[in-house]
Length: 442
Ligand SMILES: [Zn+2]
Ligand SMILES: [Zn+2]
Image (tube, rainbow, N blue to C red; front, side, top):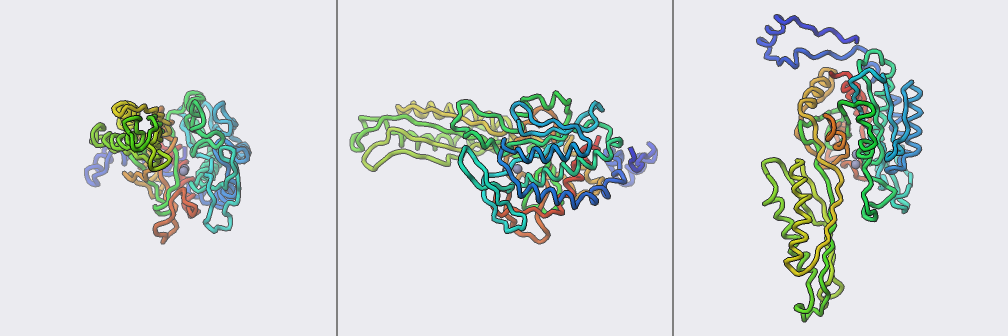
């Protein structure tokens, strides 16, 4: 490897530690390879071109057919081995560089778009349409996965050109359906489909390529373009959903003793669910949220409702808290209903676990990226969203980075998933360099 030499003799190192107060970890770091900055800069026009093209051609989860072909063709043109599709993730693309060189790491970019219309007014704004659960919809990359693809493609190209200087196997994971499957409505299915990342994990991605560590980047509004934030520990919350059907017995509103009131039961249920966070979870570990977002019952004022439905969302930033909530919600539902003489049929839809960064790897990566001259720092910023990168990080140490994309001077920029979410292209350079930095960091 052609790193600039940073070897320091033990005696000098000790002296430096004493005088400058450096830590051992800092003094032992390797500097950036001399080609990196120029390579990222030279590739930049193409990175932007690719992002804008992908932006104009968005596709929904598990329907990313054109996107898959685009990625596969580009990787093959760089001399990278390509696998298209796995059993549960047919639109995935896996790129393999330096096969068999051991110590494989995975770099992940998600490739799917959202079923919303874009209103950014950009010259390359999406006008695409697609189908979600069989219905036509506008489609756009309002979560920035176009940037994720362009950054990882450019990083792959640069790494392929310098493959002899990368002392490990690098697996490029272009993952579908991070925003969920767009073919089947999860509530209409008996059995849940696997999310994009969960599908790849189930199909043996980590074992087949002996991936020891996973890295991913998400572009984020409300942070300056190019800034990289890395959490030590929980980076994003878990997300799950619940649906509870309450069965009572309809009766005349004037004669409630002749039936079982589903409205009263559902009301008690809403209140009882709220004590889970305040009384059942270990609040020293982190936070949890239970929100009933939909409550429907009844037909008219003088008829006591015989059935009700509650739907809600569950969030946590700690695995134990999530597990407690997922276990307790059905228990509270069933027993509250029983206390009112009704019956509850709870259903939990498990979505994504907590996205947890390995603290030691997070620290190491932040230091490595700083050495590349990137504006990277350890941060406890949790944007509150959720990600299926969590499925990789449950199996192997993982680090999920946030990359700011706000143009200079942008204030209160539209968030990811807004129809006005905009990415300042200059941020892409940091993302390309961060992928390469992760592959180079030991
Ligand atoms: Zn998203
Ligand atoms: Zn996203």
